[in-house]
Amino acid sequence: MKFPGNLLLLLSIAISVFNCSTQKQGTGHFKAKKMLNSEALIITQVSENSFIHTTYLQTNDFGKVPCNGLIVRNSGEAIVFDTPSNDKDSEALMQWIKTTLNCKIVGIIPTHFHHDCLGGLKAFEQNNIPSYANVQTLELAKANNYTAPQNGFRDSLVLRVGVEKVTVKYFGEGHTKDNVVGYFPGENVMFGGCLVKTMNASKGYLGDANVAAWSETVEKVKRAYPDVKVVVPGHGDHGGKQLLDYTIQLFKQADQQ
Image (tube, rainbow, N blue to C red):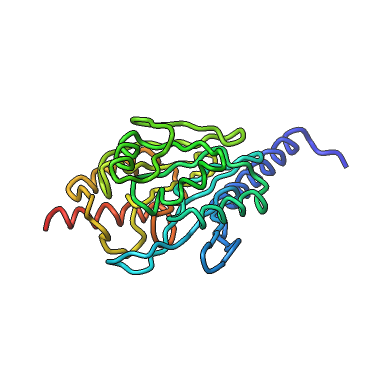
């Protein structure tokens, strides 16, 4: 059967629109799933190439606290944001990435100097994985006798993972004076770390915080990444932009009190 030229054109446009719509819906509606759920390590896939790693830190004030980090992968390579709090759990995380994702880890990025971000850094460095952090993180880690990352940056950093890139940027003080935010633009996934709170969370540990600056810093983050789809906080459940809004309001209230 032959179709008139105009009809063929209309059919082509309709098919293209349908395909684009389907792809967009698929990207925006990824259903998170557990890839690993052991006593010490939980891995949750939140997009095609992004995975939350969750381990635990025993604290005096808050008890046993689950701590999040993020893995992003592309073309057989992976970059990790934040280490577990100890070397044993870091070894387990690296082993999972190598055997399950079949990826070479090309970088580890602690997002601030606290133990839940770089407590397991030595294990990564013993495996010859380069580490990157804000220069303030290097200084604070050394001042607290922690293992310090190898490479420092001041305002922002761009690293390659396969053929994609990840960005790391310092927006200002909040949870700590050195906290940075990681972003995977290929899938619009953000690792906010402890600068960003999960929904209905309390203010948490404020011993090194700048409460007055916190909301403004997160507002800058929100403006910088208008297309973000997945936001991963340092503790608790991931979500979308509403986590940024919640954090902004939480510390606006704190600043007014």
